[in-house]
Amino acid sequence: MNKIEARLIQSLNEILSPDRVLTSDEDLVPYSFDGTAALKQRPGAVVFPLTAEEVSECVLLARRNNVPVVTRGSGTGLSGGSVPLDGCLVICLVKMDKLIEVDEKNLTLRAQSGVITKEIDDACAKVGLFYPPDPGSMKISTIGGNVAENSGGLRGLKYGVTRDYVMGFEVVLPDGTLTFLGNKCVKDVAGYSMKDIFIGSEGTLGIITEVILKVLPRPKARKTMLALYDSMEDAAKTISAIIAAKIIPCTLEFLDRVTVQCVEDYAKIGLPTDVEALVLMETDGHPVVVEEEAAQMMALAKANGARDVRAAADEAEGARLAAARRNAFSALARVRPTTILEDVTVPRSELAAMVAFIDAVAKKHKLQIGTFGHLGDGNLHPTFLTNERDHEEMHRIELALEEIVEETIRVGGTVTGEHGVGLAKKSFLKRQLGEGSYELMRSIKKALDPQGLLNPGKIFD
Image (cartoon, rainbow, N blue to C red; front, side, top):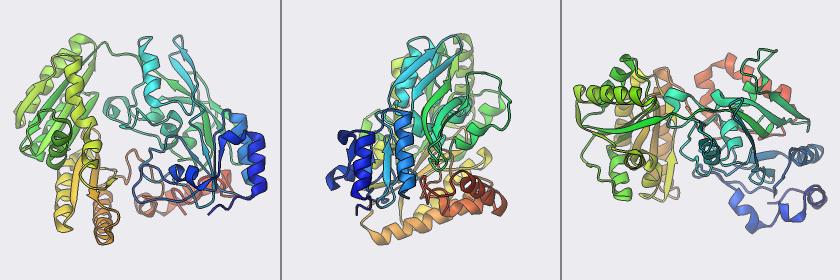
């Protein structure tokens, strides 16, 4: 249902141009959902600004007409953060895709929000630099969305998440004000760190239109290895042993038995399908250090029960081995019509028990769940393979997810490690945060957006 009045559409056409304003039903369908299964709402209109000033004018127009605004990039979110409200205005930033500057003197990069994340790192690579955050969606997700969701990735153990690389950004506030938070300075302790409130705010506080990112010298060497296990506990013990040896690999990822089977069926990498866990290990840095750390990690894997450990001979083979992990979601998505990729994080000491718990929950509720994730930082992705038209099975998934989240909170974990809260996790947020932290968060939203204009209903009601 289109709730946006014709005069507002006319105003949008005048601010932008008619070819950058979508209103027909068939044009709006692709913008009715993001990457989150079973969540759909038809917006009233979708607009494609080219500048921050155009974004500001659209926000002001929506504010005057009391029309909610939802911002999106490529729509790869997995918690419903960019799912529209019925009849809202969607501001899509994919046409704001200019990579403005790679500043080698200050080790920074400046880009509009619609630039694809992989293009950020590709631009860095041309001058020997490196943008470490690498969400699984990096080939299609936009950098603005990464900042809004504070995305993680496979290199999070060593290099952290998106927040660790954001030095500043331009943002349109709910009243249409255009401002810049942060700068290129390595040190800046002037006043409140306002940019940190917006990073991970999921489009509820402002619309980020341009970012300054910190980049690093590109590592001179990288080594990729795969370790295969007959028990998840041995895989977890290996991770603990590597960390205890004071090695911080750039990647420590794992796939469970269900996921390994799906990946092998999909990608034909040559993986044994009778293992209980596969661990992808990568170390990067100076070539001498990389060789030394790789040898230590392989020895620790064998000492802790790995059935087999393989090292890539070169970068091409490393990419092939890493494909086992990078193909996990695509491989699982082939099995059933609907794939629900969840995201919980537990202390690393609880990893093996949590994976076993998820397996037990799958059996209890007669569900198919493949689990993979970031073993090094405790971030698990239990992935439900289902059919959203099977309402009885979807109900069992709700029950199973409830148990998984409760156990996550019980052992001191968090309901999301990198996908955000959005619509999917907001019912769990207060349980994790407690009343005080939850109300503090709500008070910030009310202070900055008293009208509830931006992405209402996300994170909390």
